[in-house]
Amino acid sequence: MSAGPMRVYRRCGKCGKKQEFINSGKFRVNANGNLIDVWLIFRCKKCKHTWNLSIYERVKISRIDPTEYDRFLQNDPGLAQEYGNDINFLKRNNAQFHL
Image (cartoon, rainbow, N blue to C red; front, side, top):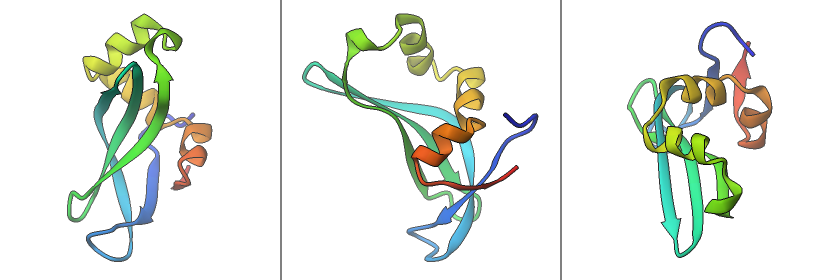
């Protein structure tokens, strides 16, 4: 993990070119029946267009640690930083980054 925020890049759908995306420190939690999706939201540094990086996709809530789930719902800044600086998490979401 990096000491400061990871610099993450991808093609911005609004700008139409590769831009730096900033960790918003916010999570999006969506329930579909008894299945949960959780994303960490990044924003284009230039235009603020959002990009949701998947943490959990279509999992039963019972498979998520209750403490972590509560931290998602509270938009815990420490947890957002942990995920936002996790190289494996970023790679799973096809992020390009600079250490």
